[in-house]
Amino acid sequence: MKANRIADYRVTRLQFRRDRKVGDSQVGATQANIVALELIDEVGRVGLGFVQVLFQPLLPEATIAWAFGQEVFPMLVGQEAGALALRVGRPRGGNVRKMLVPFEEAIQHAVWDLFAQSSGLPLWKLLGAQRDSVPVYASGLDFHLSDHDFTELFGRAAQAGYRGYKIKVGHPEIERDLHRLDLLKKATGDDGRPVMIDANEAWTAAETRAALALFERAGHRIYWIEDPIPRDDFDGLRRLRLACPDTRVNSGEYLDLSGKRKLLQAEACDMLNVHGQVSDVMRAGWLAGEHNVEVTFGNSFLEIGVNMALALPGVRWLEYSFQNFEHLVEEPYAIRDGLIHGHDRPGHGLRLSEAVRTRCRTPEPLDEAALPPAPRWERPA
Image (cartoon, rainbow, N blue to C red; front, side):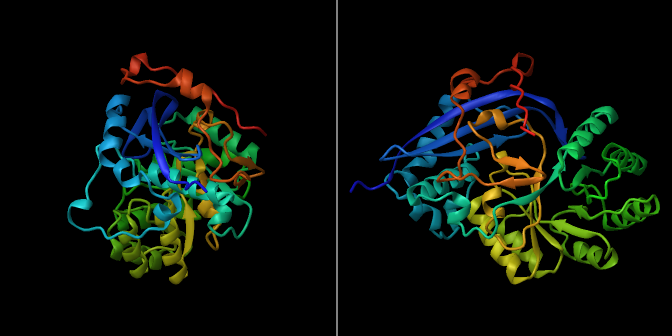
């Protein structure tokens, strides 16, 4: 029987205008710069992962392919996907370095995709599924939106049945943050669903306490505050937990696995925020379980984090932020009645759209004025 070892790879460079400026109190982006990475095994199965660079155009496609061939592929070729997925390495010396292109997450997605396909299982079942759906909250990445566009986005989210709402805060004028909470209440009909806020490290601990007190006086109950202060201020985060018992502290987004472990050991969060890297997320989930801390899923590319969210215990939230990337794949994950579901196909179930491969590929970087708009994709009701 022929071994199912990794034999080849393919990269596809994509660059297009976003349908709105997305961002937070610190950053904003108006274009998407993406690489689709496909790993191909000896029997022709294809594992898919995506690289996303937020704030500058990617290198030319030929350079990206060369970089992958030089830096990464020699470590993958001839290897079984399952062995790579489960391998534990030691980060030491020269093997801890940044790649020319940040392939790390894409490699994990593609390798785990191949592993699950070779096992004949959907990835979420291979990882040990504990449920078949997870609630989704609507997140606008909305800091730069006009009041009108903000209201339209969250009004549509309420009509679609999302289970909660998260907005960006951290404006230099706290009255603007309060104004947006007032707008959210009007846009959603004050429907009683949880409201979360994300400051992206804009505040000090004292500013966080003052903001939460102001919002409460104005009638806004905040379910969680996400990353209110710098990521490694574990003492400050712990003190916030104790000082604001009615609002959960959600942190960990900006920390690697080692940082997440230190965050948990310091008892500095009520909820551990994870994203898309399969191996790292599962390990972080196990650590959180040991500390009896809830895991919540932030943005992952095309919601691929649903696979881990369905497998880890006690996960109650996954973020959806309306980035209009669904056109990149043949069949995105289904979201119905505020719940997201994994694919039933072996692997993670996402396949690069052939239309995107042939018509939306941009081998060379384009100036922003020359960028095509993203095709509009409407999620079925």
